[in-house]
Each structure stands twice: as C-alpha cells, then as structure tokens.
Figure 1: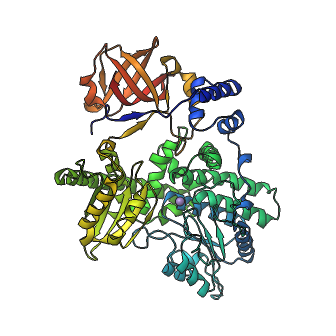
Figure 2: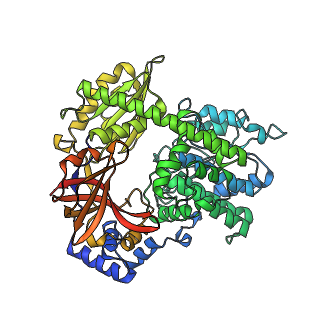
Figure 3: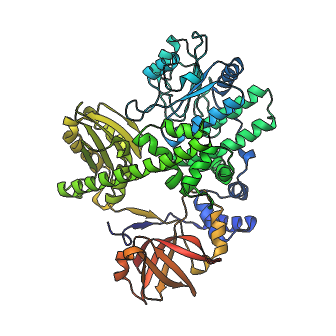
Length: 603
Ligand SMILES: [Mn+2]
C-alpha cells in the first residue's frame, strides 16, 4: 500500500465538560492546554490522578502481599533458600518470561538460594508447563541441573513457574506425584473451575475464598508478578517489611527487567504498570547487571534515553530472537549467569539471530503477500487472510501475520506446515471489531487446538483441513466486517494549532511517556496547513519526504518517512491536513520542533 494518503482518520468525541476538565488540569498542573486535553482523552480527568500520572512514584506500587497465593509461595521459597533446597525457575521464551526468570533468579541468589532456570523450547515444547519437563526437572535431568543437584538425590527441587502455568492441570499432577512443590505464578486467562492443583497459585486476578478479588490492579504482566513475588519473598526472608538496604537496592535494580517485560508484553501502560515502566526505563542505563549493559551496548543505545519505543523495536526483538530462531535459554543466560565477556558474546549473538529473524520474516512476508494477490484473497469478499507453506519458519508466523494485517487491513492467519506430520501450526492477528478468538471458535471443527484472545491467537490443524478452515473463517469474519472496513484507521489524539508545536510543549507531551497500550504516543492533527516551499526528497533514492508548512502564522518542518513517492502529488501553495507525531530535532546543538507525518491529505 502506498505510504501517506492511506488512512481513514478518526477523532474520538469531545464534549464541553471534557474541555472544562482540561482547563482545570492545565491550570492546576501548569501544563499547556494541549497536554491537558491529551490527558483527558486518556481518561485522566482530575488533578490528583493527573499529578500521579505525570510523576509516577514507587510509593504508588501496591503491597505485594495483596496478591492471592503470594504469602504461601514466599514462605515456601524462603524455606527452600534457607535449607539450600534447589529452586528451579520455569520460564517462557518471550521477553516477559525471560525477564521474569531473571527477576526471581537474582532475588533468590541474594538470599543465598541454590537456583537454576528452565526455559521450554518454543517449537519443540511450545508455551507453558509441560508434564515431561516437570518430570525431568524433578529428577534433575535438564541442562543446568548440575549447578543445583544435591548430593542426596532424594531431595526434590521446588519449581516456580513465571509467566505461565495457570492452566497446567496435568503438569501439576505430575509434580504432586513426584513429590515436588510446584508454585505457579502467572497473569494469563484461566478457568476458575479448572485450576491446577499446585502447592501455590500466584495470580493477581485470582479470587479469595469469599469470591472477591483482593488485588487492586489486574493488568500486571508475568515479569510484574515476578517482581511482586521477589518483593514479598524479600520481606519474608529478611523477616521485616522495611527491607535492609541490600534487598531494597536489589528490588530497584530489578525494575528495568520488570519494565522490559511490561512494555514488551503489551499490557496496558497505566496504573502500576506505568510506575514500573517509568521507573525501570529511567534506571536501565545504570544497571549493575552485565547482561543488560551488554544488550544496551549491542543495541547502540548507550548514548540515548531509552524509551518504550526502543524496548519494542530494539531491545525486545533481540531478546525474542533467540527463542524464535533457536533457544531462549541464551537470553535467560544473558540476564542471569553470564559474566562480562560471555554477556558481550551473547548480546552480539542475539543481534545476529535478530538479523536472521528479520530477513526470514521479510522473505516469508513477501512470499505471503504475493500468494494473497495471485489467489485474490485481498478482494472485498474475502475479509480475512489465511496463508500457509511448508517452508515457512514457525518462529516468525505471528510477526508475519501482523504485517499482513497492516498491509491488507483485515485479520490474518499465517501457518507453517509440517509436511512430515501433515500438521499446520499458526498464528492469527486481528483488527478492531473482530475477536479472532471468537471467529476461531466458530471454526473449531477444523482445529485440533487453538487459544488466545481478541487480537491474537494460535492454532493447530491438519494441513488437509486448511482450505475448509479458510472458507469457514472468511465466512465468520465477513459477518463482522463490511467491505468499507477494509481501510486502515488512524486514531487522532488531538487537533492542534501551529503555535502548539514548539519545543516547550513537546517536552511537556513527553512527560506522558512511556507510551504503549492504553497510553499511545499522541497523534496530532493540523488542518489547513499551507505548503510554503517545493516538497523535497531526502534519503537514499529519495525515499523520504520533507515539507515546509505554515499554520497560524508559524512555519514548521514536516518529514514523512518512506513517503517519497507521494511528493509528486504535492506542490507549493497547496493546503493540506496532516496527522503527525511531534518530535524534538537536535541539530548542531540547536533544538527545534518537527512534525513526523503519519498521514497527509489535500484539504
Ligand atoms: Mn506474559
């Protein structure tokens, strides 16, 4: 699709009472009216909430003891640490699982525990606790067991899961049968009537005996839950709520890991998650952990302020790359046991794996896009895409599905066929207005297994059923989307004026960061701006567009990345509407406000 001039613009509603709230906020918090309006649009309507939002503090974090199961889990883990009974952390292969593992590892180590980690293989074992792995860990038959295996083989390890396990009923039975105390910590959806029979379940949304939720915040990610457990464990193991300085410092050092997990897992960046993300990012460059420092260096972020964007596009993909292309234990090693030289080596390796991931993703995406066009699956009658191939790498199907959604503005399923077994494994991504999980439920007869939520899901099916599945899914999605919906939507945050776009105001907008789910980076809109100079091209082969525009008497530079091809449609003297993000450009020591164009149209 052509860059620029491509979206349907949507502005959320605005009412006089919202304007009154914005005026009050602007006055009491001393922020520009534009910033106050952005805050009201994000649901921050009163000065007290506004102050907390602009200045997130660690004292705003909730007491970890409020999470169901956390006391029982902490007592058991503290006893294991004191008795030198091995603790095995069972993680996951994505950023959330990797950082959650690191958080518990370092806190348990500080308490003198014998700790090992276990990460399932993304493709061979799949997500979550599996019974074979639990049995192998119980018998110390896994890589890394040597570091914790006791002389007395009759002592079983305690297993603590992170970021997974809340539906693992069968593995919990295996643990019981082997005499292993299994502690499950998780944040995923669960069936309250089919909870695993584990030693303890730690989950912020579990209900207490009277059927009430006890924890005031339901959106923690796996690393957030692990951070809370590390905190409660520290209280138990030291016997005091006011932690000794070494433990307090350790918790603060663990915040960057928690922020990486929180941002990468795309949980809402509000409430406690905002505090974690904000505190973690502001400390990430001062981390004492060699592995995290090596990753920052390998990502060329040493000289920058690390933002949520950097986590999403630089640090996170590197950590994920090992799980996608090889084995995530390398990423866990980087954040747990690696010394300085090994950290440098691992961080470099993750960069190489990430490049491999990128080129694999690119070639599969191009192949898939071509299949969609030649098969006519992009027609308005086919409002969902299902593509698959025997040579596609299973580790990247989810990312390719996301790119197809972007390219064709409809839900997409990408499948990797295993020609040996005749099975297809795939990933789905969706658009607003279609719960892909619900649509898959309607196609359940064709699926051997599926799970997920409204915007993303995974599934297994027979390759021989793929065509029937495609037809059924298209039928299900066609009922939800109309042909008019097949245009990507750009959500505008706020209309503004040429005078709003200055360095001071943009700095104030930056106080709303870190941006992410439920707190998106503001997309501003200028209507009726005049192009005051001939449009210019920049970059290799003129890939990018540079405009000089004027609005309300103010002249502004506007840049459109990968929008070079629309330069021919624009000319000096034209009036345009632009949707953009404001950025501060520093050049030769001079700072200026600049608009990064998201979309443009002739007024
Ligand atoms: Mn997670």
